[in-house]
Image 1: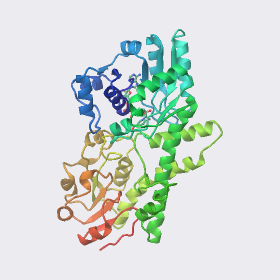
Image 2: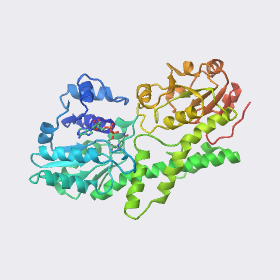
Image 3: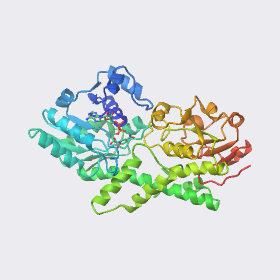
Image 4: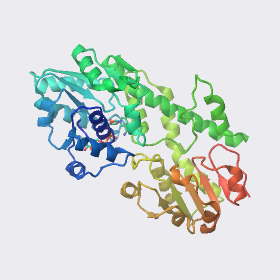
Length: 434
Ligand SMILES: NC(=O)c1ccc[n+]([C@@H]2O[C@H](COP(=O)([O-])OP(=O)(O)OC[C@H]3O[C@@H](n4cnc5c(N)ncnc54)[C@H](O)[C@@H]3O)[C@@H](O)[C@H]2O)c1
């Protein structure tokens, strides 16, 4: 497994748990050194136990040098990052291509090289070209096998996927991939074997569709606020229709995270390059982009339109609960906008504060939700961590300078908040101020 990040480490540990022998490789020596000490380089529920059990069983090892593990492997997975390229939004494939080149030099015997990173259509062709150019004698098949796990529920998702997508036309590769994923057939996960380009596109189409669903309900939420309707009931009303489905219909501050923003952008670029622009996704990305900063204006409006010198408490910084991942988190845009408007921002996140500190300066980091609320003129719920769902509302109110709550995840009920004397606003729901 080349790349031991959110995807590589989880996939490696799960494959080991299936009974395979896995070596996780990473260039980042500090990650590998931490793993040797049993310390996880990322926060993912259940991962530490899964890793420890498989290390103990002798099926999972870690190294910074790919030569030996690649030479010995039946399958080599590329799970390195594919961030947005600075300046133009195309996927930055330099890590994938560098890994392909290194792998090529170490291949020995028939090996399946599997791209698990999310990569644009045609990347598999280029990986194959690089391998053939670097090592013309290599006996290998290059396969696309995109990953659909969600951070925060990654182990469950990996072990109980809705589907496994394998893009290859090579019979030997199909056999190897079947063997690798065989334990999952027992869980009845459908395996979809397609062409390599099709598999690459499936991943982007899936993420773009989910981002579209979120953005759709966010715009419906804005309309709900204008007309006095309730977006949660609208979502339920449409989600019960099987053709629509209830998931990804939670109105909020706009999508963020390590995948949707960069993957929608990369798909847009691919569409434009091939003269088949996907305008609906172009609009989704543009709408989502402006939404996050608009959430700061919502906070300002809740305080009468001027927050200069006011203290704002922010609960939740990671892009979603149960992860420490701050990549493209909506909190970054929201906190930055609040700072731009002259507010003093205090913040608390149960797991993500260390990561947050490197991307968000000018923030006073607090020890818990209540110390964060202390003396605040408004409290904003940005990420719906479990521990923010049942706050002691009386205690919260007495800690705050003003009882103003802006709930960007619709965690609380307007009538309940009114009962406690809060001035409460949320997303797409009628507000009753007191
Ligand atoms: N994070 C998710 O939830 C998720 C879900 C599905 C798919 N993906 C995709 O999976 C890929 C990896 O994402 P991630 O979140 O795990 O990234 P990550 O940044 O957490 O991990 C990538 C790792 O690869 C290492 N690396 C880079 N080049 C290397 C090389 N040549 N040799 C060895 N190691 C190298 C880096 O040091 C890093 O630790 C991306 O393409 C992403 O889009 C991510």
